[in-house]
Length: 400
Image 1: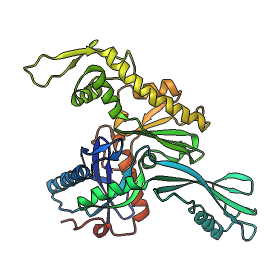
Image 2: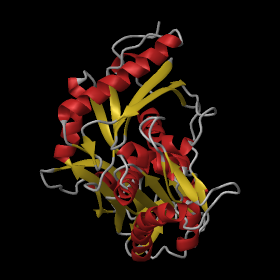
Image 3: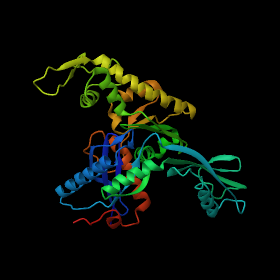
Image 4: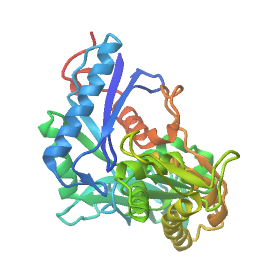
């Protein structure tokens, strides 16, 4: 049996839909994906349901075209939702139960796990995930596996990650208008981390930074668990807006400058780089301007340093600024920003690498770090639902 899953992300810059496939017991492969520019979305939040719904319809059509080109015919019925945005929060919560027979049994572990799920949320919040951190017995903490250990009270520390319920419901409404049912909403940053980290990195200390268009998510890991996580309401679109404002360009021209010429490092130039940057006009008949490369990089550096300063504060608050022994891992579309990895290395004093998702099917893609969050959502689906036949539950039709 082939297990098939779908994941959708309605982002500030792009709406992405991906399909993952895995024969039972085998590694998951990203078999098809499509992306289009988002409409009706700003700062990771939907502002126009009808425009967002049209984006979902369009990306579904792109997937169907790609599948037809391969000789397959499927109709996507539902998908897991990847969620990002500054409205997402993570709160610590501890479950606690008495140890029934002086040594911890499997029943005690199940009971404390259930206790750890009972953190109440306000009515306007929706839970995205409960992340287990570590067990403790009486006053002895940091226990990885408490079974068989002696004590009186068993505790389990967790993070409850939750979002504004209305924002999730807006995504459900937009997808519903495109005849797509949304399954579990999943936090983009922890999805990205699941896709790119190994157990050694989680043990030795690392920080995952997921660079999106409307926001930048981050997660810190140490001792095999999540230490802290959050979302900064600043992303790649803010850099584009800064360029457009500073140099009086259109958004399209600013985006082109950002991706083609700009660097997060002031003074950074390639071997053949000119001190002046060509600004494409609206047509070949128009005069075309140039701007100072140094000025362009100064604008970009200023916004990137704002993000880095907030990340530094997060590390200091978690007492992790000198404990990132496995470094910083960059994911998301904004990770490709030229010089960003070097700026992070200089400012935060840690090695930086790009996150490569642990999933098949991306061998021919460039900048695979941009697939991290949606790959993590597919891996979540595969890990939690492998025993169910998604050929029927996720899709309106079978492969032909």
